[in-house]
Image 1: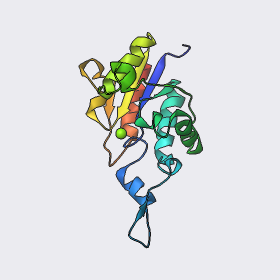
Image 2: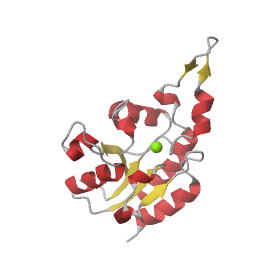
Image 3: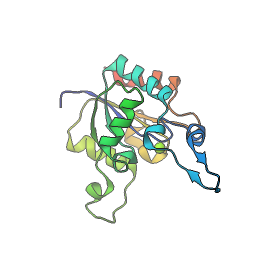
Image 4: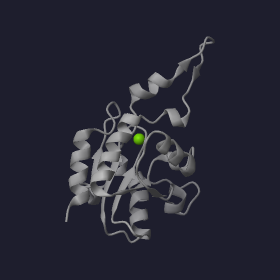
Length: 168
Ligand SMILES: [Mg+2]
């Protein structure tokens, strides 16, 4: 590994908001709803905030979002780049099957993150962006930034995350 600063990135509720997603839904004449394509579900304004963190810290991105499984890592990276991402996405966290060793296994998102840190023997600085508490645990308290699904990634969170990533 040639990086020492990592952002564990959730997407829904971080790079989009409920209102943003709702604005992309098309109501059809038959009472149906056409849900947006993944590429339409990322708010470029939120990507701009993420870009600032990366520009100021040199951090790379590990996808912890369920997007890494569906639509999949490659398509997720394409969607991020198409919406202006200027950062390297260098990996994904293991999924629950890899963490638990069981197809029917369940684990919380922080366990997937902890597994990635363990497997990669990562000793650098990291932050976790997620709109759900299950991405955090007591060990990660100072690394974890809970976003509000109505707001997504904010400049205030970005400022605080930059401090964590740049800490000596
Ligand atoms: Mg989320």
